[in-house]
Length: 69
View (cartoon, rainbow, N blue to C red):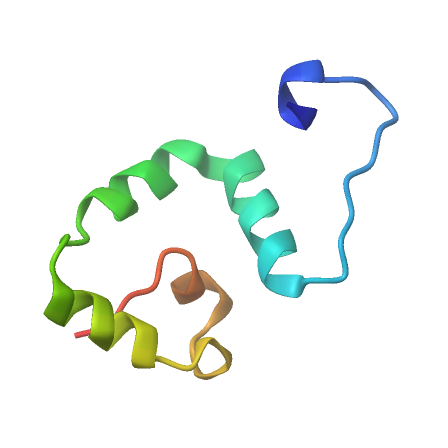
């Protein structure tokens, strides 16, 4: 909704740095995000590997979407 309004002079902020990172990725290159998200699988094993990752150990560029071997 915020992005759809497109009001000049408006600011979107949050204390959650991961959420801020998401906002920036959406703002700067949503198509690349969509492409990256399509490579993920929808199965239990993949989910548990992703869930076990510590986002703080990943570079900002690899946090959204999560990337791992």
